[in-house]
Length: 191
Image (cartoon, rainbow, N blue to C red; front, side):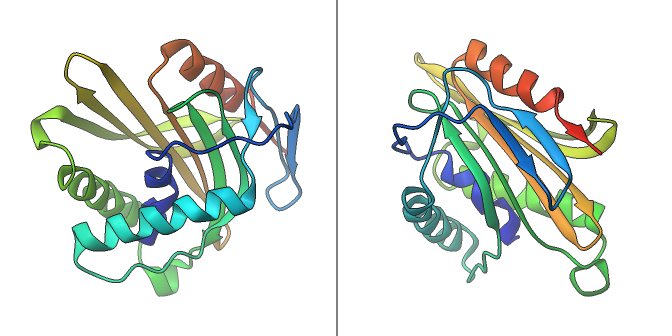
């Protein structure tokens, strides 16, 4: 269940660094992606502060200690609540159990954690699959309705690469910025 921490951290407003990167490449996953225009990188140190907050929030909601083994690949931001992040962590089905079942458990834990902060009737979710760069990803989509203000969209894409789980998380309130992030992600290549 520690896998949902990175998505929760987006809920906090992360300060961005002054640098803007253009393209990302991960040798680990042989993955290439052009960053969406208008997004800035968030420093690892700043991101770590918010991971700590998210971990505490989840531990309180789940009434259990959470271990976070995720390693940040990148974190981007454009304005408050428009974020994109990628991370990976070990996941061995022989030790951690069936991956597809784990995805469903993560979805349930995410809803439980959000429901501790927001009335349940304002939260809609679905677990589905989507093809990105020719590969199948599990997708958890959550919409949180903030009355008379906005709808917050959260999308967590994940899949196994051997014994490593890659997670790419999008959160946004601005539909145009959400589209920029999703288009960048959708146009990723894995070789």
